[in-house]
Length: 201
Image (tube, rainbow, N blue to C red; front, top):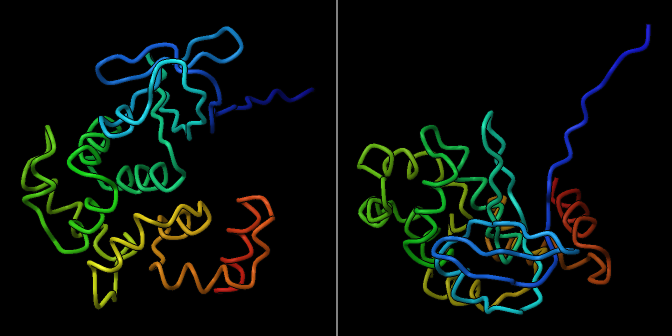
């Protein structure tokens, strides 16, 4: 008897043209199809109608809906998914948390135990903010940094996606830089990250 299999195909990226900007989402036209993608206000501000753009996508599928959450960098997507690992934090709440500042400021706030900053996110109460701090404090990439101001500036100025990906996985900026030092920068992003992780193990 032949077996049947269900194969889930998740959208990982979208490359297309900005057709419309709405209050909390953007419509990306790809080969004549418009995809509605939910984004943070900061990401939306960086996009203009008719821009050609590549978005990193987190697809959230439920019984009666299929939502796309988009990010301009892999680091932002991975940080979003890190927030989702916290009990009680869903996609909309994770977007709200990311909307209280840029990704560097939010990660620094979590690292510093700043529950008040996290509570400024819409729908986030004290208990959830404390849970985010407890669960992610040691996973946001700033652990052990003696001078966090210098690290924040360095992170903002660093556009290397492999470095960003490693930091989203919990590496400090220095560890990410050291791990990638011997990896060929011309390799594809996923291969650079794999080699960096292998070298660190």
